[in-house]
Amino acid sequence: MLELHDLSKTYGLNDSSVSTVNAVDGIDLTIEEGEFVSIIGPTGCGKSTLFELIGRLIEPTDGEVRIDGDTITEPDERIGMVFQDTSTFPWLSVIENVEFGLKMNGVDKTERRERAREMIELVGLKGFEDASPTELSGGMNQRVAIARTLVMNPDIILMDEPFGALDEQTRLILGEELLRIWRETGATILFVTHSINEAVHLSDRIAVMSARPGRFKEVVENPLPRPRTDEVLGKDEYNEIVNRLWDELRSESKKGLQQKMEEEAQEHGAPEGVQEHGAPEGA
Amino acid sequence: MSTRSETSLPGNWSIVRIGRIAVPLIILALWQLGAEVYGQFALATPLETFETMVDGFQDGWMVEDLLVTVTTLIVAYLIAVVSGVWVGIMLGLSRFWQEVFEPVILGTYSIPKITLFPIFLLIFGLGMDSMVAFGWFHGVFPVLILTMSAMTTIDDTHMNVAQSLGLSQWQRFKEVIVPSILPGLVIGLRLGFSLTFLGIVIGEMFAARAGLGHSLMLYMETVQVDRMLAIITVLVLIAAVINAAFYIIEARLRRRAGSSGDVAAM
Image 1 (cartoon, rainbow over the protein chains, first blue to last red):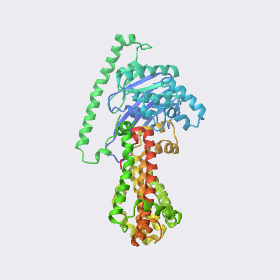
Image 2: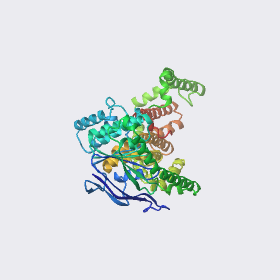
Image 3: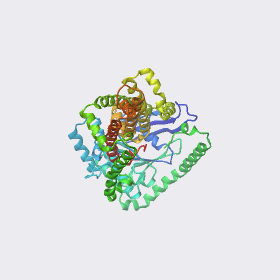
Image 4: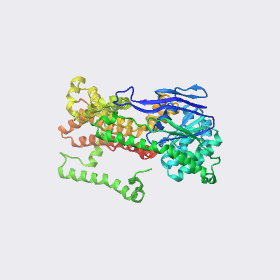
């Protein structure tokens, strides 16, 4: 069980920045074991900050993250992270990328090779073990990144818009594969996305974030039964929940856009050098 | 992924290869021509030079100078590499210190360093010490600057991956930082080598009691043109061999790292 308790992050408190930015404010959420929860929100709402907070890549200003009751204070091996950008190491082959975490943890070569091979097969990259990530497409690189996370056998997988940079078809296919992997591994997944369709397609529950400061406006149960076949996705219920989420999101997206434009106007109007110390990105 | 010029190579490969062989031959021909035009008081022919060079090793008149220069070069270069890489990484890790030191470093890099050579002479004397010190000073900057700039090319996402996988500081350095900066670092090492070598030869030509640079000037003054050219040839060969080795390493790194390997085309 993953619990987020009053999680908050304010940037610019300790350094000499002119202004502080309240990126994430008072996030509460409990995610049950084996659940698939998505977080959607407008650009710049602090989704990525929240992702980094839960993975403990950054320190929260306030609040805590608990796994099965214990508060975590550093990156925890029970949590695996998949990043938005290409995160594979170009100087390693596919299999070396996948076994990287195991190697760093001192797992011996035969065992880690075996486990890496299993995961490569699970993500559908059999035959590409010795390829270089630079030869692979963006979608295949994300498969490698997912395998690299899965091989560590995490209880909870955090994903920050993992398919955000991919084209629509690849996105759909990888989404379906992710559901298969989720079933096979029984992991808990927390999935950050800006796509309503993707969230509805994949998750049990969907948390809608507000524009900055990022709070949960609402957490919506997804009524759609699994498996999410074309038939299920063709039903009125699907449209209903998509529309409902969009209603929730619309005003926040507008607010988010406005914030962004104001910030940009400020940056361009500001004297030279100020940009660097200005607001860090909320997303 | 290869660059465009590399992908277009296979078709033109044979022409490129002919060109690569032809260019040195043309240079040799021009050298021969020059020797015939200007005579033996300025240029020896390629063949004479080659014979004198072989004689330099057999008879041994060149061996001692060569050892002095090569030893100086190795010592100065090692110090330049270790200090340059170390300081480059340290500065690269801290935005603050990098911004404080960058103008000074770039400024010092741009001055003609030979103007400071007299100071090295006065401090370290006429021997090998001042050659090592000046060679280091002459060559350390590209190593330092390119290491520092390569540090800025490290992908934040890679560092996040390292952190999320719970890597220790040392593991992060060894497994993520070093491979990330390697392509840029190797360019720095190559440029650093050329400049260390240059600094040492200039230093020896200017004020030294031994070394190839010193003998080069001696043979020029005594008009032993064949020996002078033999020394030049040896210096050129050393530089060419080391440079070729660096190019091979760089090409390999580029192939391994894909297009992200092109850090600086200096």
